[in-house]
Image (cartoon, rainbow, N blue to C red; front, side):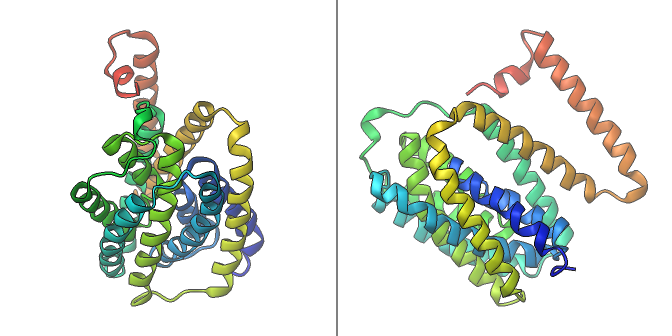
Length: 288
């Protein structure tokens, strides 16, 4: 099934790399569903493969940021080292958990990511552009984010970038560049953890990786030409829809239509609340 789907998987993998190049994250958010639902992989294999793809793609995207001077190496290496320990442990644990549980966890991570993207990020303090962050906090946050990354194959840039921005007030370009160091380090560590229990189809993995790298290089060139706010919100809604789709896939087939109706009703009510009622809590929730 995987070989037959290669022609569809490789072009779609370009989108995962494109997201990483444009936003500093999103590779695994797209790669895992792609490998599960298009390539037909088991959840553990898809997550492990995604970690390798994202790690190599992040390294490719890092080159441009190094040239532009938007990488804080000390912060990135400390965060990445702590993240590697957490990601390796998450990868070891994830290989022994039920695939359905991992997919539910991944879908919930997608929903949380979408909300964070729709909220946006606070403006960074300009005086932090060249500052490194406190060591203790960097190590703690790195370990937690790494554990999540290794466990469900998600939470790369979309957890690291907000952590760097909110923790130390790093400007967005610096946070994105530094996050690529972290993503590469802990994704490789999570992949190593999964290798102890999960087989890898290296032919498909390398093909998807090459496509994603191409997308990341293209995304890096397009990033300066597309309004970031428009791009962030559009991608945020897309991730939210994908997360909802994955959650619905885990509902028993005879209850799926009921769950879909409840979800549609909830979305309609939420949209009406935010559009009509000036005191709707959703307005505050989606405000940066």
